Image (cartoon, rainbow, N blue to C red; front, side, top):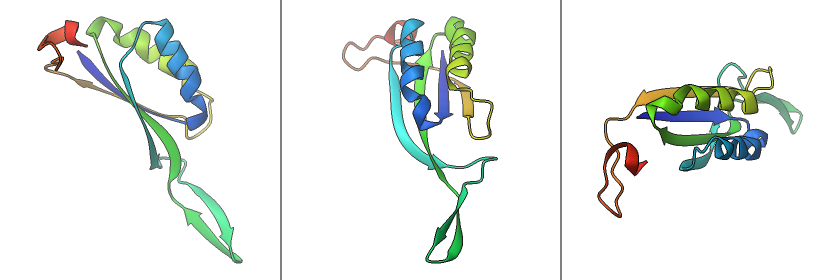
Length: 112
C-alpha cells in the first residue's frame, strides 16, 4: 500500500477530485494549508510598505491506495493539477505497512 500526500493549488481541487473518482480512488482526506516552495509567496503593500508574505494558500490531499494503482494515480494527479507555472505543488509517496478498518477490524488492501 502507498500513502500519497498531494499539495496543489486550491483552484485545482474540484477537477482533481472528479478525476480521482473516475479512476476509482475513493477515500481522500482534504485540508486547507498554507505553505511555500520555489514560489516564495508574494509582495503586498500595507500602508505604503512592501511586505513579503512567505506562505500561500494550498490544499493538502492524503490518500492510501493499492500498489498497483500508484502510477495511474500519479499520472491523473499531474494531468489535473499541472499548469506549468511555479506553485503547481508536490506529490509525496510513502509506504504504508498496515491499514485497519475500525468498523470491521478488516486489515490490508481490503480495508482501504
